[in-house]
Length: 221
Length: 221
DNA sequence: TAGATTGTTAATCGATTAACAATC
DNA sequence: TAGATTGTTAATCGATTAACAATC
Image 1 (cartoon, each protein chain N blue to C red):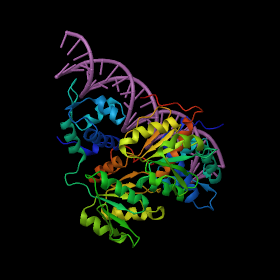
Image 2 (image 1 turned 45 degrees about the horizontal axis):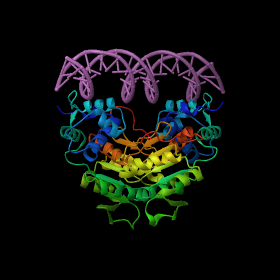
Image 3 (image 1 turned 120 degrees about the vertical axis):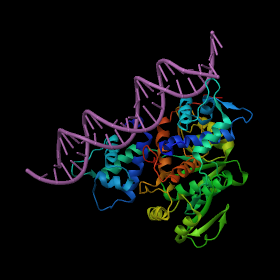
Image 4 (image 1 turned 45 degrees about the vertical axis):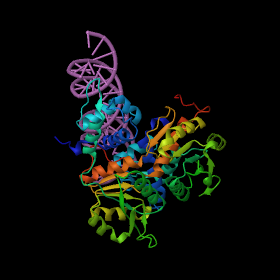
């Protein structure tokens, strides 16, 4: 029975992607099995957390034997991956946009940013790290033609909401927002805000007292 | 009576920094008062959320009058700002590190990255956006000399934990982690993980769920 | 069998929402 | 005074933790 995607929370999905990466990249490949506490150590979470997350994708281990690594990776991929592979667009090619493209298209071949958009005429038609830059007006056309579902937003604050609106109109249903502007999107579009200013100000605040904030651990992602 | 910093959660602090920025940058400066629902609209949160957050810093508005903007900004600053201004270091000057330095030292004068560290000899002693680059071995000395409390980590995954350890040893008590490695830090050090890979994979996952054959247009405007 | 690990259930905790009373 | 907004209290919801039973 396939997993119900809608049952998985943002945090769970984020941790599951981490578990898979750790299993592939960091776990001793000669080992066939892994215990929850081993994975927990790598991911810096509790072992109960790991077990609960894995149960959420309906894969089950064996008492005192742990989890079959190969099977676990496969089940994680079945849940996390799109059969038709995701296409991602970068909107805004400033310093940050370029850095993110370089970051992904160097290291993570399974998650590729295929198109980029900017208003600067000098950048149009350039290709960086296998990613071509189009003029902003072409956003709708390219997104539809290449069936892009996800967009990373790094434009200047003043146009952030406007550009986000046209992304939604073009059919993008997931936005990773690196601008400093809180975005308003319809409920059927998934939005993740990664405001760097807020992040650094928050860290600076808590670093002063050398005391962790009261509630939960810092959220990953 | 001063606010107890330790009572404020990570999320509340993040929203408070956002409210302050919105009040300063986006709110009509001729208006003396603001209602919670106005601020809520700018921040894309509920008005109850705004009221609760503001109550957390023990500033109180008046029924049917709202909040005094000037007083509210001052009280936010009293809670959020360090009297001696925070000093931030960037550790690792790749594409991402440079982009973040440019981002902050251009736009946000009140939060300056004063020192950078890298192992590449070519980068040593260069100055970018008012931020000087030192060799990694000088980390401890510079951090102590400049009284740096906060660090942004953008080094390659293989050395992330080692470098984080030396940051902690140097006296840094807040780390903003942009690497893909979950870090282990002592409980008296505040850690915020901002793994871009996890973020993009999570957005890609949920954008699929939202995908509908006929994309719904934004209902607003 | 004994010990370790797994999955399950109940308890706890925090954050958000809803309902309401207070007040300008 | 009436209406709108504020602060307070109770209810709800979700996530995590703790205690326990099952099993290899």
